[in-house]
Image (cartoon, rainbow, N blue to C red):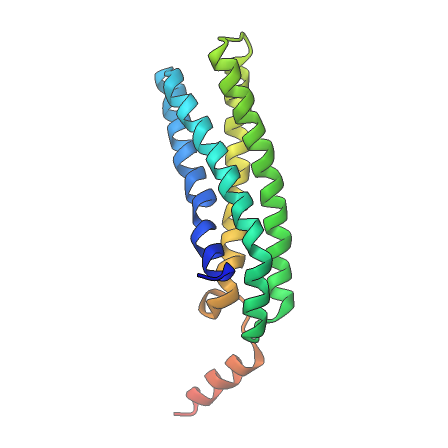
Length: 161
């Protein structure tokens, strides 16, 4: 298993986990269940850890796909979005750690931290869409919005038939 494979294995966890965590956090808020908010916090912390693992394998994956002839510019765009996503995951993870501590100590500001974490999680989830799409576009040309000249020539050639 090489770094590109590991990168593809790890990269789904932070994105999918965010959506599960948000759902559980919202349900925990509605039901006023601390155990559910703590579960959501734990999921967000795991997302942060898996995001770091994804970043650690990203450089190796970049080297491999560049050898396959993939443009550095499309990889760089993905890398920039991923760095922003990771910063948000760090803040979300820290907020979740603080939330867990606040819930455990039954701190008066625990509810404030829950809502702050929810807003952070939603913002991070929005950025996750962009990082996931830009990563997918590296090897899946069919989902790219812009086509290359070669693809345009190929489609023009098919129009002649």
